Image (cartoon, rainbow, N blue to C red):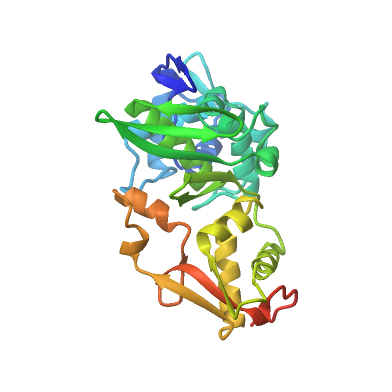
Amino acid sequence: MFKIGDKTVTSSATQFWMRPVSFAGLLRITQLAAEHPDGLRANELNVKVERGRVYRTERGAPSATTLYHCRNTLLRLGILQRRYARLFVNRELPQVRVLLQECAPENGLSPAAKDAFGDLVLHNDDCYAGFFGLFTGSRTLGSADFRRNGQSATWKRISDDGYRRVILSGSATEPAVLSSPTEIKSILYGVRYWATKELTLIDEFFRDDRGTVMYPIMHPGEGDVQNTIGEILAQVELTVEWTTLALAELAETCCEKRHRPLETLRMAIRQLVASHPGQVVTVPTSRAFATITAGSRQREELELRVYFRDAQNRYVSHVKIHKSLSGRKQWRAI
């Protein structure tokens, strides 16, 4: 059962088909299928993918189950169409035409490919109903609109009466509760994984008071790091010798509210430390203390996402900035 607010919605496996797949691999499969205008049967496509080493996993060649999920994802997103038991690339979709013009990636996707896939994922009814509706009150026009205008959402695990559930909350809709393993696998480790790791539509960080915060991010732009530095220095006070800023707070003000990736904040801090070593000091903490409330390795990784790693590979929770840099608009980069 999939619960939204006080309403319990009867769910089925057909609504929760999303699984963690590589979109770079999906692009290569799409381009392989496009080489066969007469279409391919599912087993024929599998053979060509395996022989051509088109899709690889950490363990090597993909399993039959992984290939099924790849094929199912392409069909659900409309990239492939099935006609008389044969699979054809849907060239009528403008996003598919963009994908076919891309160079086959060795690893990650280009911004154009991410946005083309993102458009198709955002337009999918199941992906919107189960996840993306949390971020927007109305159906988004596509990736660019979502990145620019989407709102923040959160998720957290709860346990009551021996049952583990996941609560998804967003300002644009009623909270949703994932109860079954299929629902959690599909939403939390399927479409959320696509949005964070594969398509970089959103970034996320953990807060004790909010849970895991998810927010849409723009593609990194020219001047983002410099603008972030300016926003950090604007928070430095003149009334005290040193201002101490928590990275968790900076993540909210400089990243979440500005739709910037967390990596932009890390780059800004690195540049500040390198340019002003005597006026910018990082405050390290131990991994054990930083993850003291975590009950699993996955929770640890989430809690650590907001921290900065210094030159000694230590986890940094705060940064101290001398008042001489307060409001400084011009700074010297090495």
